[in-house]
Length: 266
Image (tube, rainbow, N blue to C red; front, top):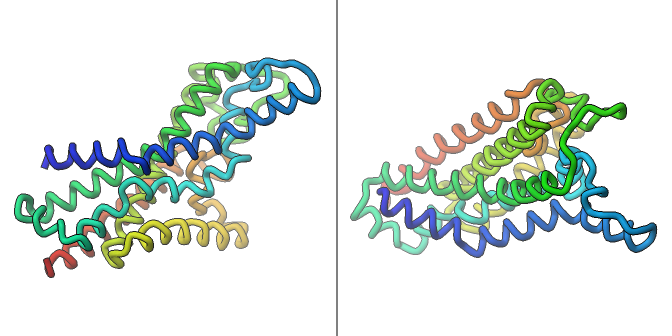
């Protein structure tokens, strides 16, 4: 299993799908800051990118708020690996795999691969953008004007490591969100082994849930969109992590049962 898992991980992590997620996600997250800086230099006066950035935590927050990255998160999450099961099943390749591996081992392999690939597809663009803002932006020091984190549940820890702890926690939430929704795509593929359904359905569920909860008002705290970069609405620091871990285990357990039943026909 280890050899097979290592091969699958390399194939998904170093794939065109992963590269596409990285490039598109990074462009989305940096677009506002870079274009704003270029327009300022063109129409108002010369200013360095560092001066334009200011507080790096605010830059990270604005990059999410203005890019729509969180809204399209499931698209990035499912692209690298969520179709592993249905691709193997539809091609017939799964028969040769099950001659070498047990069903449980194969299913664990697909879950691990999907988890790592989905988490990285969402976290890596965020990580690189965060590093850019950390390098060119200013540390998160107390000011008379306050910070974007002041009214959030992270206010009490926002000055730990000059704000880097908050950035790390946001990256962890991004990874868990990607891992959870990638496995939701994998779960759907066990019921409907069609790669297009596996790729499109998670976004439809994600966006549909957000619209319904947004209209309800009081239930907006349950919206998955707020879990990618948790700063507003959430009741406590642990909430987005428990939320994503809960989604992950629900998706994995349902996938495991559905996939085992489907493999009975193989």
